[in-house]
Length: 53
Image (cartoon, rainbow, N blue to C red):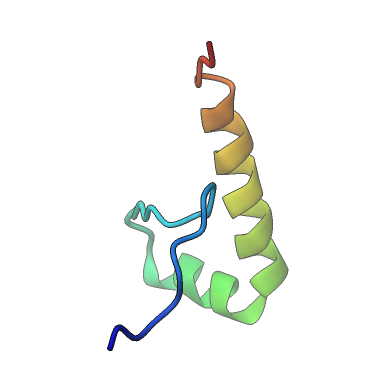
């Protein structure tokens, strides 16, 4: 019996990482909205390079 979530087409499931300072990490931990804003900016920027036929 399989457990976990079912695969969903178009789901956001890839992960990237970047190195930041401890002070920057503290800012992200205290301000979750900043992390969400950065995530959206990265997705939008990368999408501008995606070519769909």
